Image 1 (tube, rainbow, N blue to C red):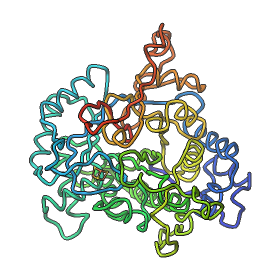
Image 2 (image 1 turned 120 degrees about the vertical axis):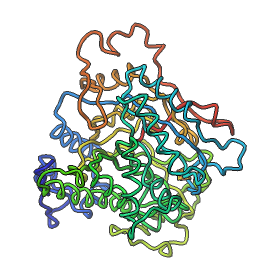
Image 3 (image 1 turned 90 degrees about the horizontal axis):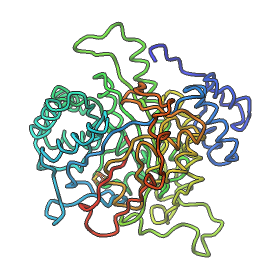
Image 4 (image 1 turned 90 degrees about the vertical axis):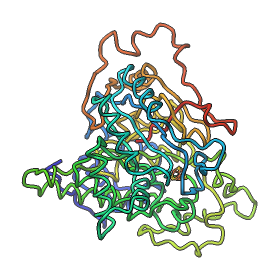
Length: 471
Ligand code: SF4
């Protein structure tokens, strides 16, 4: 990526012009936000999928599609924020509030290591009772015991709260974030996951992410991580109150900040201890909101009432491509949902592949969509199936999620027409499964490998063992 050159935009061209899309596929043209919105709203799904698939093949080739073996560890569910889409958080006085002991975390990592896992994705609620030293001791304890495990941990909203909780030195948010991040990096933190992105547009974020950082802070946090040489990811949770233009605005901010750090990397004349080689965002993963057990999920769906039929969705009325939509533009904004099904999911993922021309990996979200929609995602622009699931607590608290083992993920990839390959955190290939002893090719009884549905039916999340896989 050191020679990154921004492709040229052609704002005068019709978004559905096949010549424009073919140039995007070759990496010779860049979609404007207006063109992305037009494609997202009106391109037939088959064409959208075909172009996204061709773009994916241009970047990743025709053969390998990847997955990682990692484990989500949600170290605490105590959280100062009250996101309305969240069924995971607890107040510290709740009977089922928890913070995992170090030994419990080490035991989980030992189980991961035993099955050939390479990474932990560790995220929590934003717990004001844990001092910086608690995190440093944890990270050092992990690296002492498991030096081969990549620690992908603490999303931007957690870091923004660390700044609030720990009161680090510095005159700017960037300086304060850098101080905390260097301490955690020196203790063993390898990279940051892209959790907490949701939707960046302020009107939407103010409604759904109560107490969570704004887009500027989220992006600044990732910029600091990149300046320290880390590779991160970006995410988007859609299919709730937002408009399609909000999704494009969200992806546009991801693309703009990625351009910035790629340019920094390209300009860099050698790495130093003070300025390591610049990192950047390696992946983008989007998934639809899961509604069960969440305050947001109790909203009515738009279009059910007779007087709403045929009327534009309030989120679309409010949304602006520059993120400047005002809630006053529609009285029902934030009071009605538009849930995303399989079609909306595949369309959004395909659009992300075409629009985010500077992001290497697009992840398929089978955790919430189910294994076969995730498999179709490989033909709609995704190159990666994410993580074999050992544990999940956050998304599963809000509805049905799925759990797949390595053999099943490999079979889904192979049945889609590709060779499955295990990757690491930076998408380097660890194993290519071509031979007869591949995880899926030596299975004799597939009945033992069915995807498990994980769904928290009771008020007792502690009884559930699974994770998000959204890294
Ligand atoms: S989504 Fe994360 S930050 Fe928001 S309430 Fe839940 S645990 Fe807290």
